[in-house]
Image (cartoon, rainbow, N blue to C red; front, side):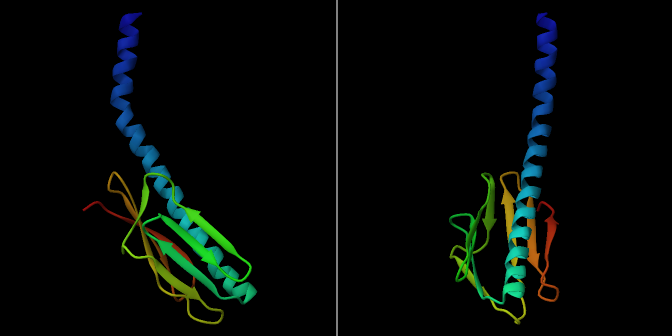
Length: 134
């Protein structure tokens, strides 16, 4: 019985780093998809309701926020995923009938995996890109 427990422990110790990396990767994909959906909802709201929306990217608080006359919405990124970039908050205004600003939001985790969520100014749709480790 002790031999079986020892073998299971060795297999678990060998498999743990791979499983942890898989969980981190899934968390990163989920966070990037959430940011893309958040930006897409902002652009859709501007176009359909013809309302100006202020988008705030808070690097210190790891959060995205939308503000308009009748809307306040926030997206807090999960633990282990951070916004990379400027130290100061970035504020953008999305105006009805105007061109969507071409922005890129860089997400990173502790293992060095990075994803970029870009808002395409031509189509207004967000696009998620993977960045290789340096």
